[in-house]
Length: 365
Image 1 (cartoon, helix red, strand yellow):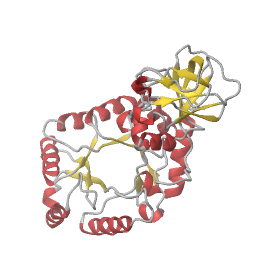
Image 2 (cartoon, helix red, strand yellow):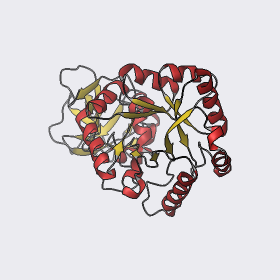
Image 3 (tube, one colour):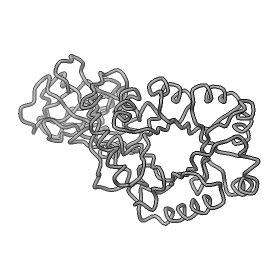
Image 4 (cartoon, helix red, strand yellow):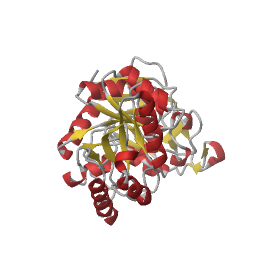
């Protein structure tokens, strides 16, 4: 944590680690890697993250929402930007005006984008999303068959620059679903007009080059998360969330701690209260389960997490004082450890980090 700030907490974001994770994805896939920067770059700040990736040679980016694409275009004038939400009659003019490429998820969206191309009297770049088993967005099998039978007419005016799908179980390399979706994706490519293809996000990058095709789309891996269920995590830690101890106190055996007195001391105990809480993204679920780290040593969270404060048992910790730094996410407390304590996913931890503490970017443009 930057000692110059007087704020009770701060989030440090290592841009050089994001770049290293990006390059590792490229090496593992053996093909182009895009930067997935939706949800404000998974909560870490699209502006700084996108610029760092672009400086590292990233030319293709994915966002979820039109508004995210517009924001990214203002930062990167030459990047290729895909919008996962697709197109509607209302969004088509903005997509065209900001040179954004919609990922078309249905026959209706394909028709809408083709209509827009006709009105423009010029070809429009497009990606097509084929559903191979996720059953969320994308053309289901029946719509794929219709498109394949009349692709020339239905894709009129469109420059098909990418065909994508999304793996449902890539966090589990032993899942049979991975090979099923790979086979379905290859079958879909065989009946569609020739175009570059992309199947893998972060988990798929670790499944091997059979899943890489022409482009991979790492998201959580860029930001230091493990895309698999189990360690080891090959990606470098990016985010460090730390707070300062605001107060230390000694309490007798049998005293309750925090709202509801959900924890009672079993001995004479030293408690440290830190200026972070659920308003900052430390979920209430980590109460009496999670940990902080002082000088690389884990200390248990005791009592409920409140909006602005969290309490730890530091009885056995040496050299602790008011103002000492406590890490809740970083080199000692991994993203996955914090997520497990909260009963959630590493994605939700990152995207849920609050915005009231300072953010310090280090290590790259």
